[in-house]
Image (cartoon, rainbow, N blue to C red; front, top):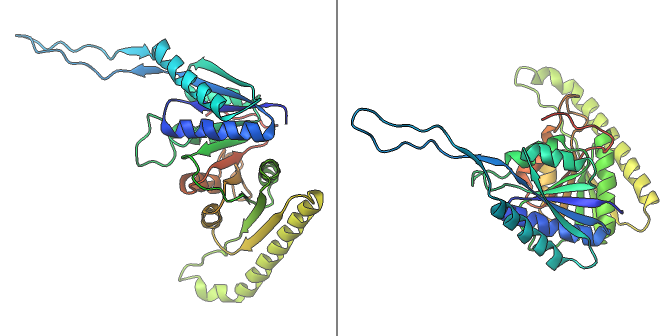
Length: 305
């Protein structure tokens, strides 16, 4: 790998964790690290002056840019932290203007991956994933890694969700690359959920139970064969796999409890063609606590958010 990793920062604690993750990833994978901060215009609340005798003077909302000093301070602190954690890694920083989502999407075109904190300074405390992270993960080209907090434990295991789709294959490639760079085990999870029948349809569904179980067994076998092919192509990498009868989000959340990274494709076999982030990717981003990589093929042009 000879490209660069982009870390987006805004001075928040999750963004600092993202910089630390990106620095470690750049060190492992021999990549340069580019730290960016987007100075967005900010709107002040409407100000109401003291009442006069005959009227009340109400000013218009005032808009101003973040101060240059504030922007530079956020960026400098992040670059300094990245340099503290790396050696022989080219670390650069850049202040960008405009809309934060559009700026980060533009960065994704040339980056090997984009790394963001799960929630920035503008997020609500109860939200696990902010709007910026969700928008970038859904529209960027290439991998987007969302980091929630510093990782206190290491499990030496990368987990990849797999369903046989094109996006899942690309995500698996990224998971293999991550596992290789870390010297970790790769664990591939394929989850298949039997369709639910309503109380009215249940009596008629009984004859199909055996057919559905046969179909599930066939799917499990097909996936196991594909993963066996991966083992043959990567003999130096320990690859384990499991096929479970469960909702994919549930299976990946459980597997993610003992993982250093969970990798998913941005859209799987069940996604609509127009969907930029499938329900599994969306659910994993909201519920898995370790870093999550959402991977879109680099050949795709990201649609407008």
